[in-house]
Image (cartoon, rainbow, N blue to C red; front, side, top):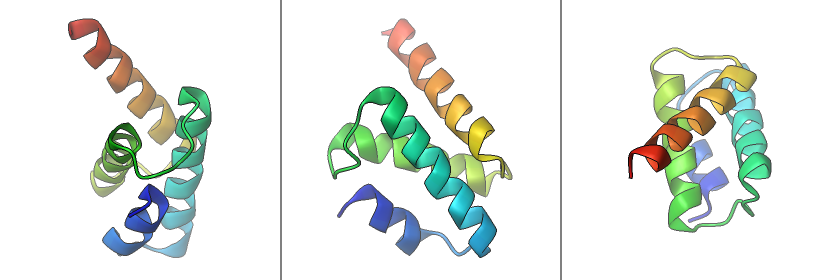
Length: 78
């Protein structure tokens, strides 16, 4: 299932927050040069954005930034 569809199916949020999540996902995919398809790495990005949104982050720029920074830290730890 494509990550974007998964975002829509998995979250019951207000429309404004869903749009923030979509925007953060698009920004992260662009920054990481992902196609937004259903590959494992894109799914990880979507899951991390969803988790941050569930924790209360609502700003698309911060959502994207936190995901990118978390991925960078994980990559350095490997």
